[in-house]
Image (tube, one colour):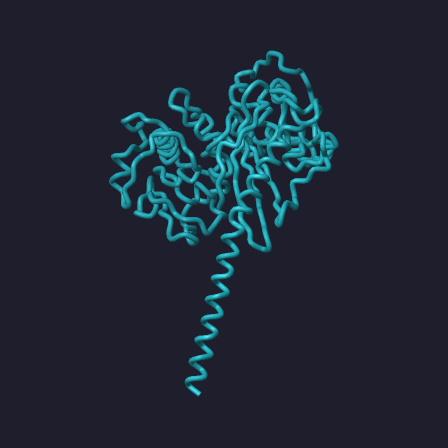
Length: 375
């Protein structure tokens, strides 16, 4: 009886092992085909970004085909789908997100012309009310992104970071991945993700027990919220991206629009209602995206809260001079860098790919994939 049981267990173990080996071999066979599904998805995204009706060629907006919009003039070839595309033995779906719907952190931290007003407004929206902590974060972000050898008044360079456990160098260069903010002095997971978020890893700065200005130190990942620490309704992750350029007022959220100097919450909400059209919903048939920076600026003075169901009156003064023209240095109506997510699948074997697509050349007509990777 013992022999029978032992042989049965051995056979079962062998069967499980063989099943695993077969699955691994099958998945290895799928790897190359899945990669080409991912690359095909990026090429389809480039096609979607390139093909727009004439009146929309000079803007990028949420009602367009690439963004999942339903405008009748969203694409010259509307029968092309970005969802559940069949190709070979598999299928894929494409999601395109422009990077300019958030603020470029590297523009805000530029040493030659730092956008301190943007950083200050961002920290205010996040809920950093302690002036000392806000100053530390602001200076430390600028120090992290720039090769200057000495720290700012409240900032930090390698001398500080190398004293931590674990030690690491101050980057002294542009941020490539926004999660680098978690390694910058003063930025806790709550400030980065927002207090309502959870199950995110703590930064190296927080792991060693560092804190600033009485700020509570986060605990282990997934349990970093405690009742004594400040509440941050918004995280920096919702406001910034590591790529892009000027903020696209046609795709930005009300939160990121508030980072524009001179734009408060009611004005940002007014801008959203203007571009969303009568139904008040972005990405639908009646959207009225801004056609120029001048048009957006012309609607700022006197802009206030709008009664529900009553879209505000809209002006269209074109790109002419305006007393608030200084804002033009911060905004645009186009996007130039896009994150393309491709979810590929073959026989229930799935993989997610990402392509970073940029626009360049005359009229931003050239589209190129500058980075391709998978999760």
